Image 1: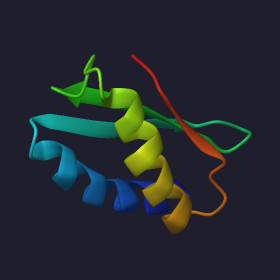
Image 2 (image 1 turned 45 degrees about the vertical axis):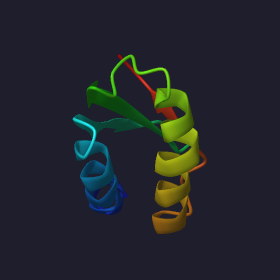
Image 3 (image 1 turned 30 degrees about the vertical axis):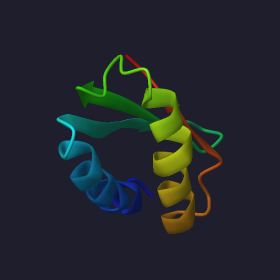
Image 4 (image 1 turned 90 degrees about the vertical axis):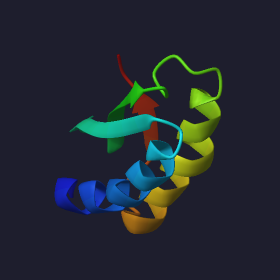
Length: 74
């Protein structure tokens, strides 16, 4: 599952890189929550939550339907 998530995150990385940001998968929890770390300009950005739910979660759930949600970690 992590391989499929990282493949989907490659597309997200391209979008975030335009604004100086990046993202990495930290872990997938036992209840299929993808925990990710936002980096660069995305870390602490006021729009990070919207990016996480509106873009990252949607892309990951389309690519990996088993994913129930996405959480950001520091």
